[in-house]
Length: 135
Image (tube, rainbow, N blue to C red; front, side):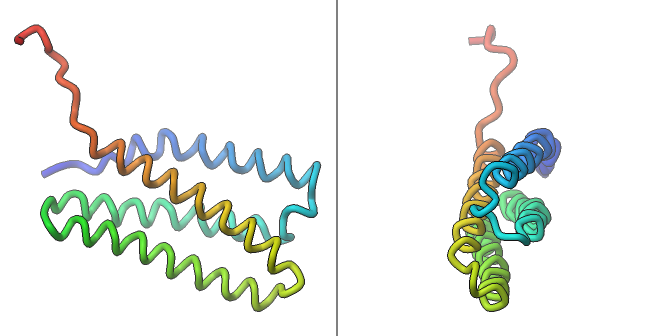
C-alpha cells in the first residue's frame, strides 16, 4: 500500500500560496482595476478546493488500475463543476465586473490546476535508486 505524499504537496503548497498572496497584493497596490473587489473570496475558494481535489486524486492513484484514471478524471471534473458554479454565482451577482471577474477567476483556476498537476506528476515519478553501485 502506497502512502499519500502529502508532505511534498504541503512543502511547496505553502510557498506557492504565499507567492500568490504577494502577487495579488502587489496588483492591488499598483493596478487595482485589474482585480475584482472580492478577489480574496475567489482566492480562498481555490486555496481550499485545491488540497481537497489533490487528496481525491491521490486516492485514485493509490488504487492502481483502470479505476485510477477515472478517479483522476473525476476529481478534475469535480473541480471544474464546483468552480463553474462559483463563477456563475459571481457573474450573476456582479454583472458590471463580469469581464474582470472572468480574467481573475480563470487566472487563479489555471494557476491552482497547474500546481496540482505538477504535484500529481511528481508523485508518479519512479523513485530513484539510492544505491547505484550494484550495477
